[in-house]
Image 1 (cartoon, rainbow, N blue to C red):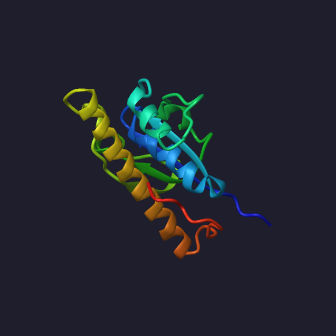
Image 2: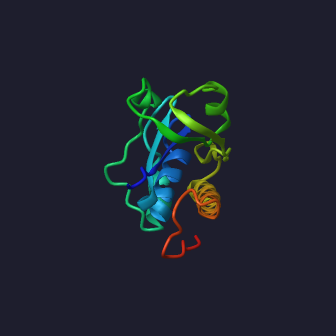
Image 3: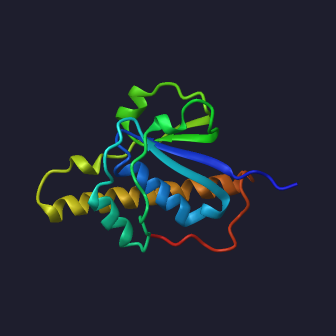
Length: 158
């Protein structure tokens, strides 16, 4: 009998940067072993710099859009993990009954970065790289615990 994939919902305030990055990166590194989703408490639009820094890794964001947490509310979906990636979402959403485990991975909000285009882009790259590192680290941890099968390929470093 085949086991169901681990399902993960990444949550942040707007689903415009951090949660989108986490979703895309987990799909990239281990999407064959997970069902991956993302949402925001107050969804807006995906930040163009999010799309740019992910495209630098050849990750296609075509068809992706910001989604509301309410799309996953009400029992229609059930997640193994809810991963909250920002302080604001952690404070505003203290309970989410449709997940077994809750993780908190706070990352800086790259959308709040000040400065010119080059400086803002560097902040987005820095956050992307931090998210990528955390995702790879977590996948390795789950592999070591035997919760997911080991990958037949190494996950490339960013």
